[in-house]
Structures are given as structure tokens and as C-alpha cells.
Length: 178
Image (tube, helix red, strand yellow):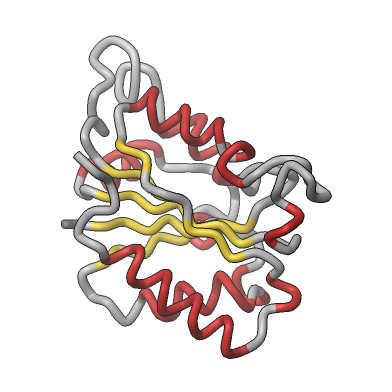
């Protein structure tokens, strides 16, 4: 299975978690690692290149820190421009049908804050519903979420375990029941 990991962190060099995840993924030559802020520092996305990249892979992982209950701005722009009508959805928009789409998210808040009784009042599954619906619209099969909460308090040991778990998540043959 050809897997593309799209990393979208506006300050990846200073990110302890997302950078560690990326560095570990880079050890696996069978993965394609694509960092949006590095590729498009000016915010001008090459839509044709991005679409060809997506077409060439079976699994797409969007890796990002959770920003204001959503994605970083460049990933939202990427969605708006790359996942276009007639290509990703709508009449003739079937280029991503049958592919897998996963999310790898880091959050500042602890896991218990992402519960109905927690500080954020909603689970991560609920808060990522727009991305799940995007997956439905573009015909991809949505993978279970991969989330690391409370990044400000993650120990080195927890980060090492999370990194190992993340690589396993990305490389698993299939996380989706047929």
C-alpha cells in the first residue's frame, strides 16, 4: 500500500511532537512524507502537483496540531483548492474513491478535556466530524483517529511510545473493516 503523509505544522522545527513523528516516519522509505509549509511557504499551492501526489497513493494521512478545533490554515486552504469539484467530488469527481484517509492529531489539552464533561465539551470524534464528512464526500474510507493529547506534558517515554504507535498506525495494512 502506497502511503502519503501530509504534515501541516506552521512551525515544525519547534514542534517536539510532530517533528518526532515525522523523523521516525522518514526512516521508512516506503512512505512519502510531504510537508505543506515547507513546500508552500508563500501559500501558493500547486494544485496539479498535489492532485497527482494524491492519485499516486492508496492511503493519505493528514498530520497536524489541532488549531482552534480545526486544522492549521494552510491545510484548510489545501483542502479548498486541491479537493476540487469535478476532481475529488461532484460530477466526474472520483479520483480519490476507495483510498483511505487518516488523521494524526496532536492537541495541547489533555485527553479528559475532549469528553462531553470536559473543558472542550466534545470528543475528538465529534470535533473532527467535518473532516470525516469531507472523507465521505470525496469517497475515501475514513480511518480511526490517531491522537496524542496533552502535548505540553508528554514525557520522553510517552513520546517514544506515541511515535512507535504512530508508525504502526501509518504502516498497518488496513485499519478499516470491509
